[in-house]
Amino acid sequence: MSPDEYCQQKAARSGSSFYYAFRFLDPQRRRAIIALYAFCREVDDVVDECREPAVAHAKLDWWREEIALLFEGRPRHPITHALAPHVETFDLSKEYFEEIIDGMQMDLDYDAYPDFATLSLYCYRAASVVGLLSARIFGLSDRRTLKYAHDLGMALQLTNILRDVHEDAMRGRVYIPLDELERFGVKPEEFRNNLTRESHRALFSFQAVRAREYYVKAEAHLPAEDRYAQRPGLIMAAIYRALLEEIERDGFRVLEHRVHLTPLRKLWIAWRTARSARQPG
Image (cartoon, rainbow, N blue to C red; front, side, top):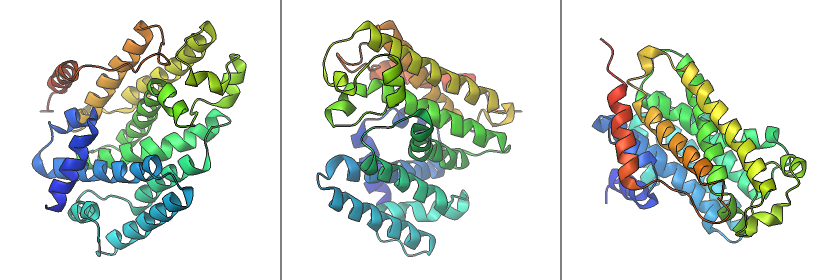
């Protein structure tokens, strides 16, 4: 199996909405973004699948070393081999890869986040940095596009947190800030129950408003001349905003079941969004 095939399989197995966005890229950019996505999945799996914290720490340390070797031109892993041709082409920053690993490290260090300031750092490392790397792969001509990528990453991560609040709680993690739980009279252990109270709806509605504000800010930052190149990000924004709307329509019953969009609906959103982002000139 080639490094690119390894990454392709890693991305396909995840079943993520990101896969719908990648379909509209040219082959080189598609290989680069799938390699980046495979890297993110690989280090995320370290935290999700390692039951022993010491083992997870050791694996993350291994990946820090592997990123250093990648930027020295000596990759060992299939994913870093797949990334290697794209590092210089798309001006990908070593520090951003290290920040992603730092985000996974936070999952080992925190099982709950005391306030939004702390959660913001996690969201930056786990999602906004991925957005910044992705924006370079997609192509940009205006640095304001990096502000768009940052805020879009925040929006996507906050939407994920709301969707997965019950699933995360069952794994012993709470991502909604604890001071906000206290403000709405909600205890963290309530997220493990399949019961939605009015206090939960009020708390989750507050989270949804914040996520929507980040989508609006992201959209405002994106210059018109970069919209076509950034179609994959716009597709992700459209899919996740539709997911957020679905959660709201469902009465924020995210503790009772996982809200999702059908593959056909995602494909329709992707096609419609790509079609609306016309090529300049």
